[in-house]
Length: 234
Image 1 (cartoon, rainbow, N blue to C red):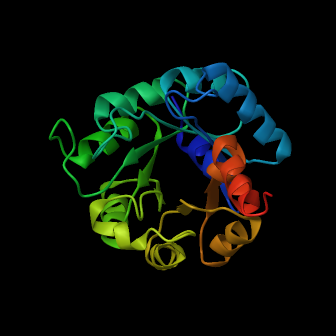
Image 2 (cartoon, one colour; image 1 turned 120 degrees about the vertical axis):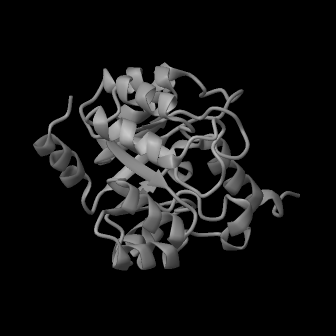
């Protein structure tokens, strides 16, 4: 069980740093726990201060390979609240080796119809840290009030109520607003596609930055380059 001092050590390691999200979608060639373990090791060697990963097998594999702070989640489903949607999922993520449990903290109904506070309380009681993935300012404030240790802007643009905020880049307005209001760290996540955007997120008040697709998703990266050269084919 993580004690009070260790909790602060985990968060201190992430201050002003890069967290790399190592995830692959079902059916993709890289959708394999050992592959994600290797991707996490490569991210560590490149300077990542922490790793974010999903799935119990991936978390166990990564935890066994490195000592960096590990943000874990369990995606169960494909619609609505599916990022660590219940207290049961949250405790399983913690048991798989995560230091911080990331969960959907939006105001949408949870699949078991239990309150968000139940999941947060369960992780805290077990000695873990909670990262609340939110889509709006109000959700971030509420998650912090409920006891989340960290608030992430992960879901801005990915809920029905925030579709208009799904811009090409990160929601830096939300990062800045939450950073100015909350007493807990705010992590910028979502559509950070360049080093310049990552640096800008920190300038806007982010405690740390999560980058996934632009580092660890070769299918998307290849698509960006393929699209840019497609017009030049003879």
